[in-house]
Image (cartoon, rainbow, N blue to C red; front, side, top):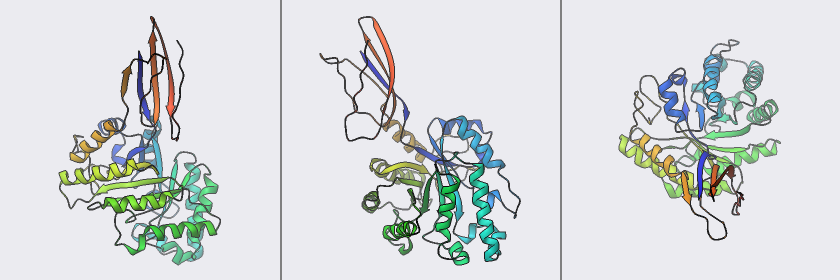
Amino acid sequence: MVRVEQVAKDFPFGSAINNYIIGNLPYQKWFVERFNAAVFENELKWAATEPKQGVLNYTLADQMLDFVRANQIVARGHNIFWEDPKYIPSWVLNLTSSELELAVKQRIASLMTRYKNEFVHWDVSNEFLHFNFYEDKLGENATYEFFKAAHEADPLATLFMNDFNVVESCRDVNSTVDSYISKMRDLRRFGVYMDGIGLESHFGVPNLPLMRAILDKFATLELPIWLTEVDISDNFDHNQQAAYLEDVLREGFSHPSVNGIMLWSALKKNGKCYQMCLTDTNFNNLPAGDTVDKLLKEWQTGVIKSQTDEHGAFSFYGYLGEYAVTASFGGKTTSSTFSVSRSDETRHYSIQI
């Protein structure tokens, strides 16, 4: 008899969180039971960590990181700079060019020294296709210098651009797949390499053929693609949100070049989310939460029990991750573990009793 059980998943599937999760044991329990990845909604952004010039406050981010560490959750760093002036600290807006140049250097050094090796990714430039505050102030090469400095500060972190309306729509002329790739090529000309493709994925009615075609085109670059902020517009009722969410998640998960999916569903104390909540304030699932639970259950191998064939062989199809195997024969039992990782070849594993 052979018993195989998937004990951990390799595919990062997670959600945004915010400071409402600090000390909130029901929220923490609900989150950990489902997700193996997280991204902070606002707590790492410049406006949150330095609301006044020279006054740094990482208290909330540190407390959220304690939760992430304690539960061995993969965390994305979001974000170092946001190009949209609406979300840049007010004191930054009025700096001279020389003052701003110093401030951004201090921002990178402070943030990434404090959290070196803590976040697997950093969104270095958020919404670079739509806004250009720093380029207007510091010159057209400003963002490229941000990538250089971020890489020097944390060489192990994967550096992303992150933008919206790339896979969601073909009507936004600022954020076509071609404009995104053009920015990446510009980075390379300046000797800077962006390591990952961040697609925010804030959907209205999903155009799945468009989404698939854009993912296919990005896949030719052979870089990790992440759907970084998946949600469905609150213009739809909860049931329609859930139906569209399932379409998007299935499309993303099934694409071989998508390496991770993050939902943008951080719950606030007042029960609100950006667009799409998964639960109510008592952590009872809304329809979107039920959809997530259904897919998470579907996308795991679970427990398989079977007999070997006459040659002592047993085979199965499984999702990427860690597995525990137990084999019993003639009154003897032995146990071991193995991993299933990306490969074009069948994974062979031998166990002897």
